[in-house]
Image (tube, rainbow, N blue to C red; front, side):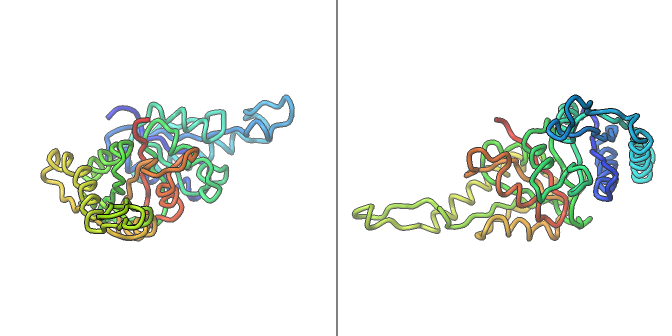
Length: 293
């Protein structure tokens, strides 16, 4: 692996908890940790002609470096031998972390923050970073089960293959079992025509659909399973509502991995509805992995 793990901090309890997780993730990967504080306001909130970054104003510089010092102290407690750097960068949290993520192996943020760093109920920075960042995003939330599995949300999409690869690698890194979970239901399911007039004799062949969904799961897991023969992998096919089933699975997991967008995503959405639901409601940390465009 090349590049650091980056973590965005703003002094909030959530962002400091993210530092603990980011330090452990960096140690696990054998890479440095880079602590980043974005300082600046969106251009629309600036008075005319005002600079976005002026650390000399109102004692801001000591405050910012105090935040970073506390974050670094947390990181060194979590991983004493870890190489840690810290930086203040001018710009909004999204701008800064999006740029920083291009050279990182993983970006980590908390689920809430003072500056909108990942204020998920508003949808803002974490959702946009998950959709646009240059590396996988780990959002620290909930209470992970340390001995639990890595849960992979399988959607069968081409873009979702990157999430499958990431989940297998994470399970191996953590020495954890992998649960490959594919959830399906009959809402909007494919119709299979029976004999006679298709307009009058269209039936939903649930057995046929179940077999097709089993194939989706097998196609996602099978090739990777051969690459990691010692990894304990459970293939779990569940007929249910997708988002509630994945949130429920997160209760006993140490990590949930999802793609940024799966099948059926609405045009114009930055992030798929399943990914957004997990970022808002999962009971453990969530990794969102972008696939190819």
